Length: 267
Image (cartoon, rainbow, N blue to C red):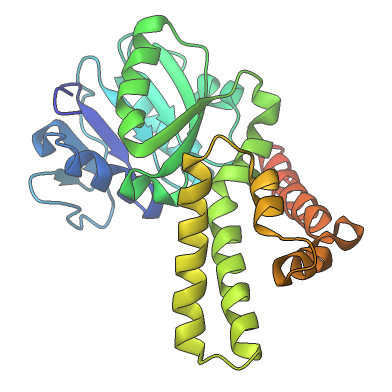
């Protein structure tokens, strides 16, 4: 990232785009290479230019990150599309907006790529799903930009993009809910609420780091922790009964995925 010299134009700088930008700047991105279009005009970071309307031109070889609300796409494209050219890379993080729609709005752009990051990109521990038909140079450019954010997973079949979004894009919220539920369960057994929350958070964090460093699948790791006849096994028996946890997660991801499909259809 310290050698990154490509101009970066952000259309919108909300929660997710803001996390991405914060990480890039922390990794050495030159703030002078970044322009943010933000109607409020509020500053985003020292040295980053913020404008309230679309600039009069898009720099050669620029990457344009679409980080506004999906419903604003047509309005943004009317002002932005005439400024793009063969050297422009459009990088969209708009949920539920398929590649065919993006390409229709930006026919002059050289490359159009969909990405779905998740919140931990701000600390370099995120997951970014990536889909788009690009030439090798454009793909290298996008990969170089996204790699400091964490794991980058190319998705060959766009039909799976909403499923990926449900898993990794929405996943942090589901994990946060699980941590909270674990803490609430500890409190229900008599632990002080604040202590239960600290312990739940540290437990999940440690388990995730341990699983990431292991060559063994999480399913097998769970069984290794659960000694026959022990407390962990008794608890797992409750989670595993009738596949209740597995079925709950399938239903959760399916609901999120189906909503993504509905948004893409304009429903």
